[in-house]
Image (cartoon, rainbow, N blue to C red):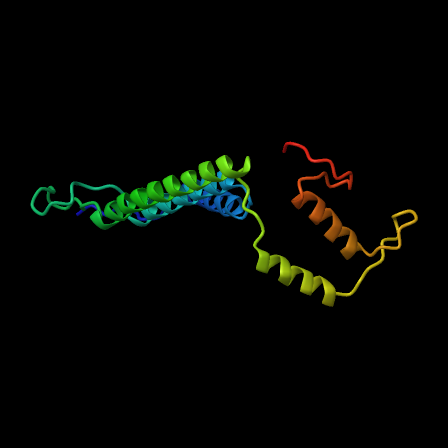
Amino acid sequence: MVVLENTPSAVLVVAVGVLVSVGVYLLLERSLTRVLLGFVLVGNGVNLTLLLAGGRAGSAPIIGTAPDGEPMSDPLAQAMILTSIVIALALSAFVLAMAYRSFQLGGHDEVADDVEDRRIARLAAANAPAYTDLDAEGSDQTLDEEAAEVHDDVEAGGQPDGSGEGGAR
Protein backbone atom coordinates (compact mmCIF):
# COMPACT_ATOMS: atom_id res chain seq x y z
CA MET A 1 0.00 0.00 0.00
CA VAL A 2 1.38 3.42 -1.02
CA VAL A 3 0.79 6.34 1.34
CA LEU A 4 1.18 9.79 -0.14
CA GLU A 5 1.96 12.81 1.97
CA ASN A 6 -0.79 15.45 1.92
CA THR A 7 1.17 18.51 3.03
CA PRO A 8 1.17 21.29 0.43
CA SER A 9 4.32 23.00 -0.73
CA ALA A 10 5.21 26.18 1.15
CA VAL A 11 5.75 27.98 -2.17
CA LEU A 12 2.18 27.25 -3.23
CA VAL A 13 0.79 28.40 0.11
CA VAL A 14 2.74 31.67 -0.18
CA ALA A 15 1.51 32.05 -3.77
CA VAL A 16 -2.09 31.68 -2.56
CA GLY A 17 -1.51 34.32 0.12
CA VAL A 18 0.06 36.76 -2.34
CA LEU A 19 -2.64 36.27 -4.97
CA VAL A 20 -5.50 36.72 -2.52
CA SER A 21 -3.96 39.66 -0.65
CA VAL A 22 -3.05 41.60 -3.82
CA GLY A 23 -6.47 40.75 -5.27
CA VAL A 24 -8.30 42.07 -2.20
CA TYR A 25 -6.18 45.24 -2.28
CA LEU A 26 -7.14 45.81 -5.93
CA LEU A 27 -10.82 45.12 -5.17
CA LEU A 28 -10.82 48.09 -2.79
CA GLU A 29 -9.78 50.56 -5.51
CA ARG A 30 -12.19 52.93 -7.26
CA SER A 31 -11.12 52.07 -10.81
CA LEU A 32 -13.16 49.27 -12.36
CA THR A 33 -10.10 48.07 -14.28
CA ARG A 34 -8.27 47.47 -11.01
CA VAL A 35 -11.38 45.83 -9.55
CA LEU A 36 -11.42 43.49 -12.55
CA LEU A 37 -7.76 42.58 -11.99
CA GLY A 38 -8.59 42.02 -8.30
CA PHE A 39 -11.38 39.60 -9.21
CA VAL A 40 -9.04 37.67 -11.50
CA LEU A 41 -6.29 37.44 -8.87
CA VAL A 42 -8.67 36.39 -6.08
CA GLY A 43 -10.23 33.82 -8.42
CA ASN A 44 -6.82 32.35 -9.24
CA GLY A 45 -5.90 32.30 -5.54
CA VAL A 46 -9.11 30.44 -4.71
CA ASN A 47 -8.49 27.97 -7.56
CA LEU A 48 -5.00 27.30 -6.26
CA THR A 49 -6.42 26.83 -2.75
CA LEU A 50 -8.91 24.27 -4.05
CA LEU A 51 -6.12 22.50 -5.93
CA LEU A 52 -4.07 22.30 -2.74
CA ALA A 53 -7.08 21.04 -0.79
CA GLY A 54 -7.56 18.22 -3.30
CA GLY A 55 -4.28 16.61 -2.27
CA ARG A 56 -1.64 14.99 -4.43
CA ALA A 57 -2.40 13.67 -7.87
CA GLY A 58 -3.38 10.04 -8.18
CA SER A 59 -4.90 7.82 -10.80
CA ALA A 60 -8.13 8.64 -12.63
CA PRO A 61 -11.13 8.87 -10.29
CA ILE A 62 -12.97 5.94 -11.90
CA ILE A 63 -13.59 2.90 -9.74
CA GLY A 64 -11.76 -0.16 -11.02
CA THR A 65 -9.14 1.64 -13.10
CA ALA A 66 -6.59 2.30 -10.35
CA PRO A 67 -3.86 -0.29 -9.78
CA ASP A 68 -3.90 -1.99 -6.40
CA GLY A 69 -2.84 0.28 -3.59
CA GLU A 70 -2.61 3.47 -5.67
CA PRO A 71 -4.92 6.25 -4.46
CA MET A 72 -7.31 8.02 -6.79
CA SER A 73 -7.49 11.78 -7.37
CA ASP A 74 -10.25 13.69 -5.64
CA PRO A 75 -12.80 14.63 -8.33
CA LEU A 76 -14.62 17.08 -6.06
CA ALA A 77 -11.71 19.54 -6.05
CA GLN A 78 -11.48 19.36 -9.83
CA ALA A 79 -15.22 19.99 -10.24
CA MET A 80 -15.10 22.94 -7.83
CA ILE A 81 -12.15 24.48 -9.70
CA LEU A 82 -13.98 24.13 -13.00
CA THR A 83 -17.07 25.79 -11.49
CA SER A 84 -14.92 28.55 -10.02
CA ILE A 85 -13.33 29.22 -13.41
CA VAL A 86 -16.75 29.58 -15.04
CA ILE A 87 -17.99 31.93 -12.31
CA ALA A 88 -14.81 34.05 -12.46
CA LEU A 89 -15.10 34.31 -16.24
CA ALA A 90 -18.73 35.45 -16.04
CA LEU A 91 -17.93 37.98 -13.31
CA SER A 92 -14.95 39.29 -15.27
CA ALA A 93 -17.10 39.75 -18.38
CA PHE A 94 -19.70 41.64 -16.33
CA VAL A 95 -17.15 43.99 -14.71
CA LEU A 96 -15.43 44.52 -18.07
CA ALA A 97 -18.77 45.49 -19.62
CA MET A 98 -19.44 47.90 -16.72
CA ALA A 99 -15.99 49.47 -17.10
CA TYR A 100 -16.46 49.88 -20.85
CA ARG A 101 -19.88 51.47 -20.41
CA SER A 102 -18.60 53.75 -17.67
CA PHE A 103 -15.73 54.83 -19.92
CA GLN A 104 -18.16 55.53 -22.76
CA LEU A 105 -20.44 57.67 -20.57
CA GLY A 106 -17.96 59.48 -18.35
CA GLY A 107 -14.56 59.24 -20.01
CA HIS A 108 -13.12 57.23 -17.09
CA ASP A 109 -13.84 53.97 -15.31
CA GLU A 110 -13.85 55.22 -11.73
CA VAL A 111 -16.84 54.59 -9.52
CA ALA A 112 -18.41 57.85 -8.34
CA ASP A 113 -19.39 58.56 -4.76
CA ASP A 114 -22.92 57.79 -3.81
CA VAL A 115 -25.05 60.78 -2.71
CA GLU A 116 -25.92 59.04 0.55
CA ASP A 117 -22.23 58.32 1.21
CA ARG A 118 -21.42 62.01 0.79
CA ARG A 119 -24.20 63.00 3.19
CA ILE A 120 -22.96 60.59 5.85
CA ALA A 121 -19.34 61.73 5.38
CA ARG A 122 -20.34 65.37 5.83
CA LEU A 123 -22.41 64.51 8.91
CA ALA A 124 -19.44 62.63 10.36
CA ALA A 125 -17.11 65.54 9.55
CA ALA A 126 -19.50 67.98 11.25
CA ASN A 127 -19.54 65.89 14.42
CA ALA A 128 -15.77 65.23 14.43
CA PRO A 129 -13.41 67.44 16.42
CA ALA A 130 -11.83 70.17 14.32
CA TYR A 131 -8.06 70.37 14.10
CA THR A 132 -6.60 73.67 12.96
CA ASP A 133 -3.99 73.67 10.24
CA LEU A 134 -0.90 75.25 11.75
CA ASP A 135 1.16 74.82 8.57
CA ALA A 136 -1.12 76.86 6.30
CA GLU A 137 -0.02 80.45 6.11
CA GLY A 138 -2.80 82.97 6.61
CA SER A 139 -5.50 80.29 6.68
CA ASP A 140 -7.91 80.02 9.54
CA GLN A 141 -9.70 77.01 8.02
CA THR A 142 -9.72 73.68 9.75
CA LEU A 143 -8.27 70.58 8.17
CA ASP A 144 -11.77 69.16 7.74
CA GLU A 145 -12.93 72.22 5.78
CA GLU A 146 -9.84 72.18 3.58
CA ALA A 147 -10.26 68.46 2.90
CA ALA A 148 -13.90 69.03 1.95
CA GLU A 149 -12.87 71.80 -0.47
CA VAL A 150 -10.21 69.62 -2.09
CA HIS A 151 -12.72 66.77 -2.40
CA ASP A 152 -15.30 69.08 -4.01
CA ASP A 153 -12.68 70.47 -6.43
CA VAL A 154 -11.64 66.98 -7.51
CA GLU A 155 -15.27 65.88 -7.91
CA ALA A 156 -15.94 68.96 -10.07
CA GLY A 157 -13.08 67.94 -12.37
CA GLY A 158 -10.60 70.47 -11.04
CA GLN A 159 -7.14 70.05 -9.65
CA PRO A 160 -6.62 69.30 -5.95
CA ASP A 161 -4.49 72.44 -5.61
CA GLY A 162 -7.62 74.58 -5.72
CA SER A 163 -6.99 76.06 -9.16
CA GLY A 164 -10.40 74.85 -10.32
CA GLU A 165 -9.19 74.24 -13.85
CA GLY A 166 -10.58 71.06 -15.33
CA GLY A 167 -8.21 68.69 -16.97
CA ALA A 168 -7.98 65.20 -18.32
CA ARG A 169 -7.10 62.57 -15.81
